[in-house]
Length: 233
Ligand SMILES: [Zn+2]
Ligand SMILES: [Zn+2]
Image (cartoon, helix red, strand yellow):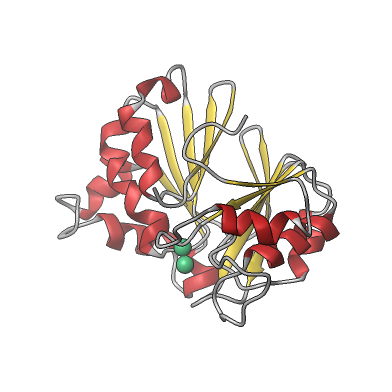
């Protein structure tokens, strides 16, 4: 499964990134039972974070289905234009108009901090990836820093949250890879930001032993765990 984080508060669901895990909203309909508003927030447009949007046409029973995307921030192009391109013909929808009717009810430009229903969302531009990406923070509950090389500025951004989801593509203490972080680096961000828990996400699918990641992370920050597909307990 690729990146997708599901948060629920009453009848509102906030999803961070729409990787392949987004299809769970189709295969496990109880995840959307009683949901009135589904808000999908994208960190950037790479396909491993957006391919799950193909499930949107199957979710039309949710009255409000919105996509928040940092088009201008990370791609210099309006979000609506990019999402229409991604989901419009010839890739998915029959017509461009279907994108904002049958798939999403609205496409919003994500340009800074924003209140989405009950969720207070803070954003930070991360410059160290293939192109820029956006780190997300939801209230004091969760920070999500993915698709970034080690970036010390994420310490202040994530400070004091309960759970930090940080990418750890490399099972190492450090890496000089320009676009992704190592487990030890994620752990240093967690320790400096004084979070309660670190969950390592966006793992290398070729990694044979996830314990390797933990070995590098827990020595720096003991409350580290590997993100699994399923609920965070
Ligand atoms: Zn990615
Ligand atoms: Zn990426």
